[in-house]
Length: 212
Image (cartoon, rainbow, N blue to C red; front, side, top):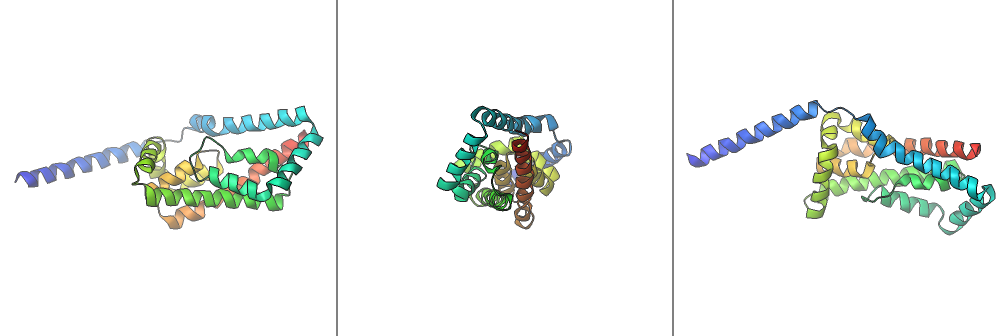
């Protein structure tokens, strides 16, 4: 009887916890101020820094720097940087490539950035899905779930798409999507939105370069 009662109590507690979590998820709303602080402000700082540096060193020196990067690192350098940043949880942004990429051929560099970023999201999802029980990964996903879990549970794939287009922590949200076992048939195609993001951000920095 005691075992049965204990089992019933545990079930009741689980149902109560699930009900409370679902209730809290229903009350979640996108905090655009938080999104701006996390994403748009750093992007604005990168753009301002780009503007200041190009004006300071001059167009010729900027072109020389881009030529050096292209000759020594090339598209593989851009690809590897974006892939690593969008796969691992690092204090870096894939947007740092756009000041360099802004003067390159858009029909080459945009697909490179988009592919690297999308593959980074796919890899992050796989890490969350397959490795979430490893203590180091679990510690991270548990921390990420506190910040973003309710949004993913409420908005589902729409939030992954939002993270893919806005300057939100894309790799973090993809890892969490994997840990929460979101359907891969929906998550993996959603990462392709990074191609659109790459094109939009490239256009923004290219426009800034033309203004300068």
